[in-house]
Amino acid sequence: MYRIYLRKPNQEVVDKTTTGDPDAARAAFKTLTERTDLDGSKMLAVLNANGRPLAHHRFDGLNPQAEWRGRTHEIDFSSAG
Image 1 (cartoon, rainbow, N blue to C red):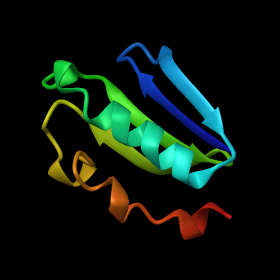
Image 2: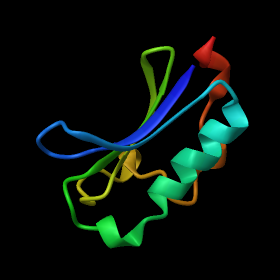
Image 3: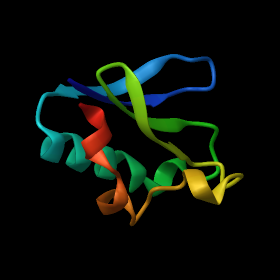
């Protein structure tokens, strides 16, 4: 099961999607990462599979390796089990 959501700095979860379909999960995560209105914020887009993190997208720009905008096709779903 995939869970895709935004996490606020206070750990509150919003805009949550749950799906068993990896293509739908990738699409939902891509939609979140493309939200330019969140750029510069401390929000985090999260993609989990079976309770394990597959990808996190930071909007604050502090860690380029944790920025998935335009790269969601690179996420390895094979480790999702």
